[in-house]
Image (cartoon, rainbow, N blue to C red):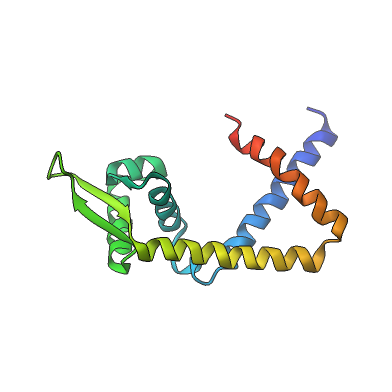
Length: 144
């Protein structure tokens, strides 16, 4: 890879990383939870129900750490914990209505800030460029 191309890649990575960090800070609701807690809620929203061991594997953390996270989310009322129908020793974790609302609120706060930032700082032409870059970025995200 050429040095100039490498510089472009570094600048893109740096800008995206800074944007993600900024977005995380722009939700007062989201800051009440750790990154792993928010990510766990998103996984539950995507998969409907999961076992604690599955969540731990997806988050790449220990079962013990996931147990602490789930205890906190349960205490806040963001998740439901029920016994498995097939094996009463296993727990099934689902997102509660309150957890779903929190995720919607976090996304809304971040979207509102991002829309304001784009409107305040970007020309109409730059806004059009941002719309056009979404598809290529999604391709990069899907790359294995």
